[in-house]
Image (cartoon, rainbow, N blue to C red; front, side):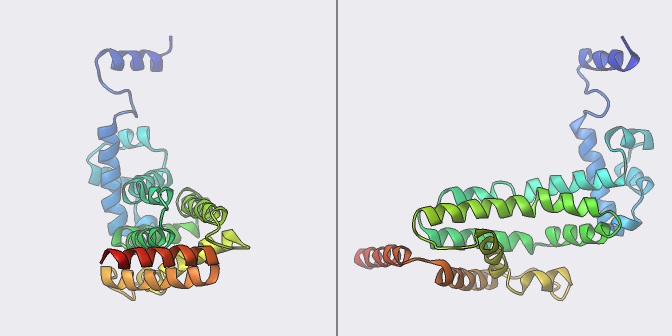
Length: 236
């Protein structure tokens, strides 16, 4: 039996995580890295900076992460999991198409224009020039997965006869852009110093959903919404 196997068995017997497997230590390193990346940016940050900020030895940090790029990607994945967790689940409950699109669009716009997400995207954009593979992975693991969920949602609405769309892939991108009209670029370029208000997001998203459904909504959707309006009026 090799030394690594003996060390692993010894750690298990003692009830301690094996090297590189302690979630508390891993979180400690990522928290330190988060502060360094926010303060210095990806390019200027060094593993020495992160080691000092996290309060761990250089040997320890390399047990968990091979390099700065790997550590940064782990940080991004953790942030994405926290911020966007379960966000797309609301697309699985689509009884009222318009209201579902409005609710989803508002949450999407709120999160994408939040300070944390804007900062992360700026950092990724800055690093992607030197490490294009990182930018590609960021897109595939985040925006692309969300886009695919929206495509599936729109296809389901088409099958229900509520939408008529020739290019669903394009329509999914159009929906996102309509919900972020003007907001994302203003935030990413720091034209805005504060995130948009709930009221502004609500106005932009409702207007965007209205345009989207005027372009792609069917007569069946109009009939359903008319019946819903009549039923609502009857309750008043």
